[in-house]
Length: 114
Image (cartoon, rainbow, N blue to C red; front, side):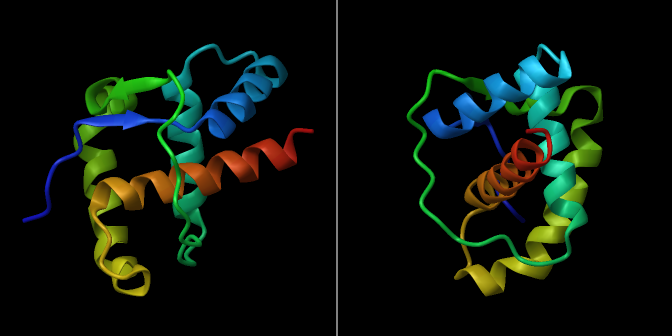
């Protein structure tokens, strides 16, 4: 059984990208933007590139806040993707896998809303 996800903490770079996205989209909540980023990344069937992503910003949310009322659905989708892709990433933990997908999704959204 995979471990659960308790807390998601973003990097300072992600925070700055999300601030820009908030101003461009009018979406005020970090969790909504991060959900969109996760879905954008998961829609790409390729494995996200591995990188060390620091948790060095003050943006932090619980899994419950991140995923909202569809927490079980997001977790099921994430776990399925993890099963398919984690071997290509050196068997990283699901929390780091989530961070990679959020990071890739934020980058995609940030680069397409300039």
